[in-house]
Image 1 (cartoon, rainbow, N blue to C red):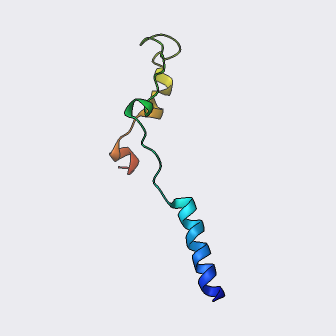
Image 2 (cartoon, rainbow, N blue to C red; image 1 turned 90 degrees about the vertical axis):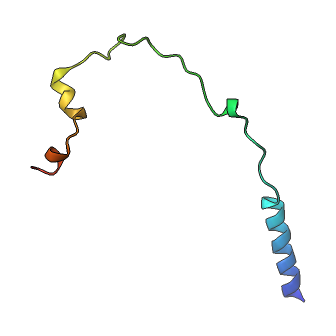
Length: 64
């Protein structure tokens, strides 16, 4: 009998926690608008000495 009560208590606790799905999220709440600096402004200038850090080549990665 105690086993039946513990199963019912477990089921009730699970139902209380996971009994319903969370509310819907509106599409306009899924994105955030952030102002950015215009292109070419700030410290985003091209630096040829550091350009190798962003170069990707499969032949170089394989050591060919």
